[in-house]
Each structure stands twice: as structure tokens, then as C-alpha cells.
Image (cartoon, rainbow, N blue to C red; front, side, top):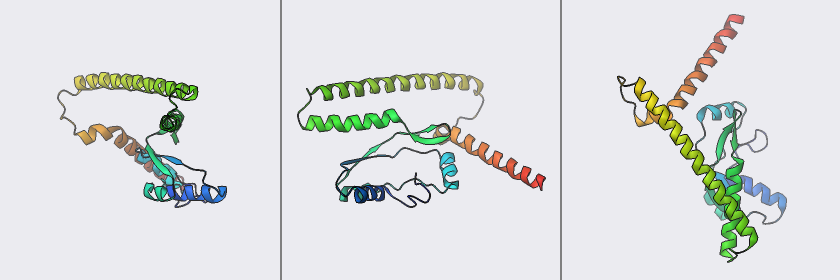
Length: 185
């Protein structure tokens, strides 16, 4: 997200350009950037404060001599859009490991430690995904029992049902607040 008054209308390449200008040197080889979906309700909250998603102009990054790497690591933490620190760290470890492999240093102790850590984190992520899938499957079983007579939902509705509910709740709360303010007048 942009920072109001600091990085208004900055794109990915604008951020890189500012760093390069301040550093007076080529200090950036890679730019890891997030391309994941951001829940619209949270974007709306940031928009109210003048912050907007950063434009991802990866082609311009390449023109600046920086290799852009797309990853998905945005998450919601305490009502704010954040980068998952483990996913960010794993992205950095992957870059370092690939660089060491390119230099034929797979037996280097640093490479072995980082690669082992990366594999362990991937296993943890897989286990969490399996557990989440299992919970969803169980919830779906319960829902099927209660919805046997209901009309089946579309793929869109199933995928975005929680977001739609959240937007409706947000709109309802906003309307209640508006009515309360009118009543106070």
C-alpha cells in the first residue's frame, strides 16, 4: 500500500527508483512483490486514509536492472493488511539458495541450513493447508446436511460467500452509524 503524503501514486518501479537515488549505488538485485488478492473491505479501509495498492509495473523494474519476483504473502493481521513474515523470509531464502546453486555451492553449510529451513517451512505450510482443507471439508459436510433442500450455490458464490457477507455487514454497520448520527442531530 502507498503511504499518504510519502509515496502517493508510487508504483513498484518508483519505490525502487527512490531507493536507488538515495543509495547512490546499485544496491537492489531483486524485488520480491506481492500479487495476491487483497480483501476489498480492507482496501476500502486503507483508501479512506488515502492509501492505495502499489501498481506492479514489473517491466519497468527489469529496465532498472532489478529482477522482479512475484510471490503471494499478503495476509490480514489484527484488521490490517500485512506481509506474512515467514513467507517473506522463505522468499529471501529461496533467492539466496538459488544464487548459491548457481555458484555451485550446494555443499556450503549456509546453503544446507537455509535449504533445510525452507523445506521445513514448506512442510509446515503443507500441514496447515491439509488441516484447513480438512476443516473446510468437515464444515461442508455439516452444511450439506443442513442444506439438502436448498438450491446449490454457484462456484462464484461459494468462493466469495465470506467476502460478500463481510461487505454486507460493513454496509449495514455504516448505515446504522449514519442513522445514529442523524438521530443525534
